[in-house]
Amino acid sequence: MNAEESRIMEKILETGGIRIAVVGASPKKERPVFVVMSYLLHEGYTLFPVNPAYPEEEILGLHCVESLKDLDLANLDVVALFISSSRQDAVLKELLESGASPVVWFQPGAENGQAEEMLRSKGFTVFSGYCLMAERRAREKRKKA
Image (tube, rainbow, N blue to C red; front, side, top):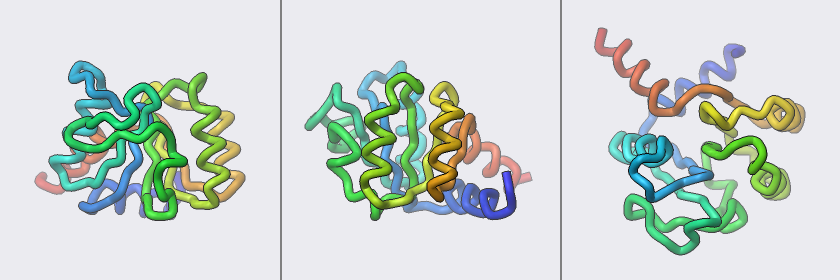
């Protein structure tokens, strides 16, 4: 990770009010995405659940949309992927077609080397294999020490 990427990650992890599209959002409490979303909401992040399996439903009191096309990506800071690489093609296409360039965050289990490389070549900042919740907790712990 270079210095600019480190600065961007710090801003995301240290600043409240960051706007995040959560691709693969789920109302199932046993799913890691539900736990991460609950934590981020508690920490002051603004979340936008995205999952074609739950269109028009509420997840943690938030309206879930079917796809990234249903959001104004220019007003998002991060698109966090909680879906396997085999399910990412449509999401990546929507992201590229939007003309916006939010940070793309591949959560653990969603890593996709080929997509990450392609996004970086198009000017996107990409983080992969880092958990938003775990990274924020680790930084908070270091701040208190």
